[in-house]
Length: 193
Image (cartoon, rainbow, N blue to C red; front, side, top):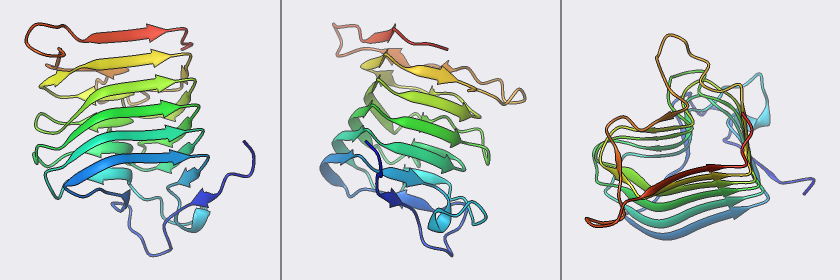
């Protein structure tokens, strides 16, 4: 797809600004064929905002965040962060055919970053490219993950902060489980590093 519409914040946004957040109960968030840039007014001499999605205000439940054929670029911290200990749950985060680059040079956050009380249950990356990012691809600091699936992706110039001791996939103390009797899965297939 060529000539994607470009979405950016207006001038005056700060380096801690968030492009999107969600309400306490949100069904699905679906975006397709859009170029999201962290530079205000899509101008590289302007401020680079911190986040694409950073929900930290309310307890929330989202069934799916899906981006297809989108660009996510120039975010100072991370495109996807749940934080604040608000018991936020995104059941599925799906990126298909996306390009994610120039992420995290104002912090050590991962491209997908969540803490012990807020979580993404299923993370699915397909046919996507991730490059030029400072922290981890995925950072989960506790609780459980149901599924992480990375298929037909290209990942390069990642985890570029030697001082933070980050791993490409940093699951910390998280476990993989669907329920008490079914183990979750981590799948990495047909992916180039």
